[in-house]
Length: 415
Image 1 (tube, rainbow, N blue to C red):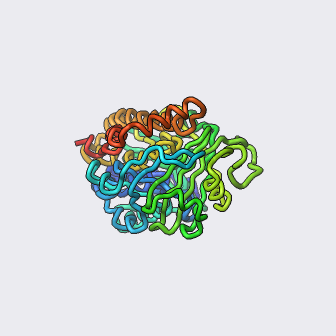
Image 2: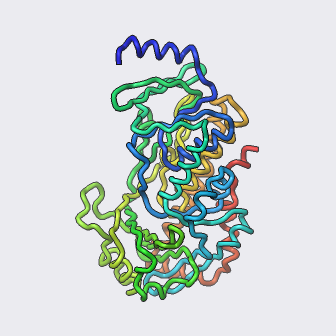
Image 3: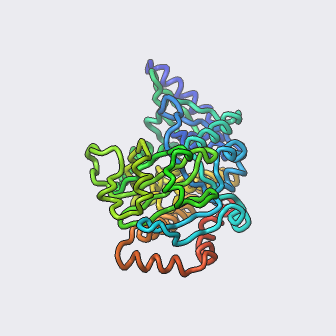
């Protein structure tokens, strides 16, 4: 683009700032949720997404009540609900014997205890529901094939340079939000704290419910449940998605390849699931194709990284899936930030408050995930002690231990 034209555009933007506009980098779960929540507070929102299309990618995910209550307020559950499954229970089982260690009632119990449903869905269904909701709002503009390249702040706004196919444009806004995932370009421009590998990989596959081996079906409850099996250094989770038509599998095991190309296209049943129940091994053999997802985590949460620059979702706090809270934390981030900005247009003050509030919350969830990992992957005497505790302790006590997590209201904290 001609340098004189760039200068004219820059000068026009400087003369005509829009204090009610917010720019978001990334149109994933975090970015779309934030756009919808901000538009409800009267802001105009520009989303820039580098992908050519918002394709249906990913696999199943769990949405606990701390997330679904927020999605319901944003009118997203109306479109998403019919594609979800509301499990009757969460069951924790022994991978070697197949026996039930603990069964926590959900469904109506979750609605009564925490005021919102516990749902299982496909990630693509959630993203599509968010996208359809965003497109119904005239305050939200979504631009694909565009990437935020540079940004700078002045006294009252942030100037963002966006790379399109054949040009670079400048946009001025009150705030730039990095919602561009674990490899966030926004974070990496000025922040050297990158995500690090955990040494584990999540193997994911979806199987038609009718194609499950009969021996494996015999291990499952007749009603829909989220079922987890524990074992030494590995665990497996299975639950229905897509209105119950598909079963989502997640097998978490040591990452034996690190950054090298994987020689196998499926979990190593001999190394990682040796000695497991025959019906479970049969289901793993028949499932596929498998997709390996190397798991990463952030050593520290990083939200505010500039005067008018903030991160949310995996860009701020990538975490392994042991607490099943990755999507929920992104949704909480988005709604908490929008709630604060809706009350106070002093962006810099809001970002300080937001960062302090969310850091404590996310770190507590990460600690719970680390505890779950120890429990799921225990071996020897520790596994025996775990099994004894789970069998002897009443489910009500475990549910009480989840109140702080599932009963949390990210928006109410700001009222």
